[in-house]
Image 1 (cartoon, rainbow, N blue to C red):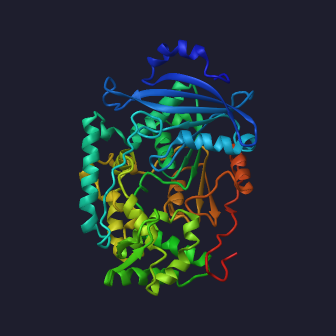
Image 2: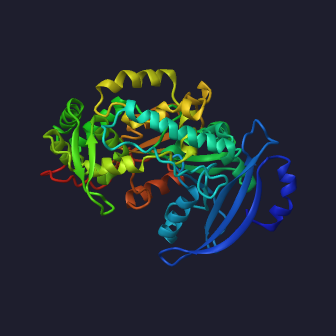
Image 3: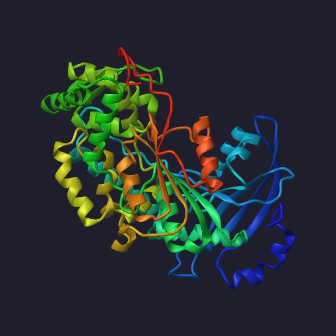
Length: 480
């Protein structure tokens, strides 16, 4: 493509439409100023695709797309940023990266940045977000028996309301979304592009490469989630908790977490928690699942990990004041959030072998099955059907693939990346030491250099990149 989405492309759009259902519309061009003062050329557009490709003449949906290029730069190889969640905005990821990175991004990228709001997210239409809360009680400890009926009721209400609006919820699955990504490629006139996916975005990138291998030049998979990794294995979470303990020089941490959950299972604790909104203190009853679920919700954040060893020590001695405000916040704010997220995860689901393994491992795991709670139990509430078993099988694609995974990542652990790499003949796996699920991909110089080398096609890459160690709270020293 020329530096701008050419008017000729629009005039020829009718011919292109015969080959693909995607339609390019509402082009707008702007100048974007990065923080370093550099000028960026921004093009916004919509790509219209069928809501369900089983019904090509049925309702259509609109995908929001942005393309970002340095002002005056020639066209280069396009790079597509697929957001995680599922449910995050790829448009926002691209805009934030461009404005924060500015001219320095040229050290990594050799072409345009493209952001896509996946179906049901961001500025795409329809957006499947909802404000529906679960209304979880505060005067009882968390438990599946108490919580699941309320969660199912809220989920069912949202599903019914969206169906009444004519939204075909089963169409919001990763295979349809993968076809969307390739439809955008065709609408933009690109032969091939590099797919960048983080967390769920890597799950989508792999599905896109599987279904449309001819359109993919390279894959960059960060904190990767493979075809059968939607539901987390409790044993792998335990392994990462042990690695965190080793990094923190806190060998007793895992045992302390077990003692804390056992203590709450025996006797839930009532606490008066300061109201974050400034009101009077709120009474809250904490149980074992409260602790497990709270850790599961924040375990990807390195700031939370830095406090975990100290919190474990306190809780094993019966002091739960540190975790109580988080538990209160989670109960108050817990809700459906996004019907798109629910439908995507429930459709991706898990193989029979993985589900059986979760059931075997959960009773003895530190966090039980909290990493998958409550989503794994909501098929009936959403009337969701899993994609065929073949979707979850490994596959092979002969394109250069870079996998980056933090050694302290409990959401998409190192074992995930190894499984993915084993099926891809041109995969390079790099472990990012001292990194959790969330880490700054474009900030540290070693990571930027690594990405640039991969995109230049250099064959030899390091097996590990080391970031500065986490500063664990209240501990004498951490592993160097």
